Image (cartoon, rainbow, N blue to C red; front, side, top):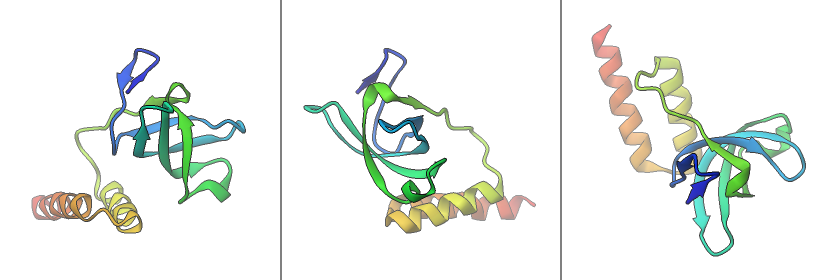
Amino acid sequence: MMNNDKAILKNNDWVKGISRNGEMIIGFVDSMSLEQKAVHVLVAESDNEALIGKTIPMHFTQLEVIPMAETKYAGELEFLIDLALATGDKEWFEELSAELNLKKQEV
């Protein structure tokens, strides 16, 4: 799904944007509806704390993809592992856990 001709949104992309009510959100794409041009975002951070942990619909033009850094620190990986557990994403949890284990072996 295109977002202002900047990037193609896909499931599990990290995004940031402003909700219809003017709240800043950072989260990841949980699912999409091409017919409605809606993107369902699981909110990880927001200036409205009531939204954190909830999935909210947003129009794709309200969102911008956050580029993922190649290298993650152990603390970032632990946060993402917690998020994967909270969302029930087993595949992502296993991928992040393996990456964290490798990072611990390097030290």
